Amino acid sequence: MRILGIDPGLRFTGWGIIDYVGATPKHIANGTIKTNSKIAMAARLAEIMRQMQDLIKTWSPATVAIEETFMNNNAGTALKLGQARGVAMTVPAMVGLNVYEYAPNLIKKSVVGAGHANKDQIQMMLKVLMPNVEFDSEHAADALAIAMCHAHHMPALKQKNEMVEV
Image 1 (cartoon, rainbow, N blue to C red):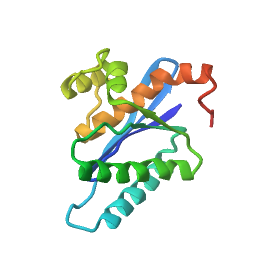
Image 2 (tube, rainbow, N blue to C red):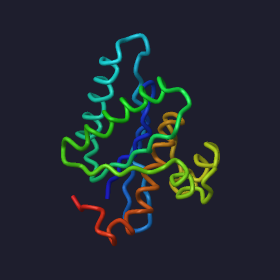
Image 3 (spheres, rainbow, N blue to C red):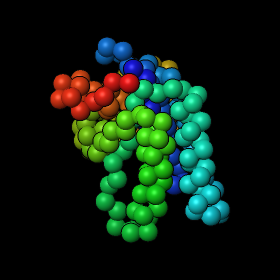
């Protein structure tokens, strides 16, 4: 199954695509959608939308996983993240893809085995699981971790009938 993982952000939205067959992940691609902080908010959101549409057309994922929003002390930052996250969730949903959400600690625990792992530990484990993988950015690495988390949880979701096959 081809999985698109998304690490949402207004300035940087990481994305990572894996194929997961059995228990073996295969890295397909990863990258970062970057927006210019000097342009209007609507234009930045539109850029995220356009690039997400291109990703889906190019790579044809079967399902999408995204990181849940964590609590942020800065309301303005949280609102901007929420807007980018909304776009990142809506684009795949508009083409009929299911979007699954995962908490940051669950993603870390799924990939590294510890819910408070740091970014270096996550990247190291991704390289163990998918040898020779190179990351476009730390955001792309996070997106691959989100895709891996979903791959680990798919059997339980299917068993509980919470995952729809495409």
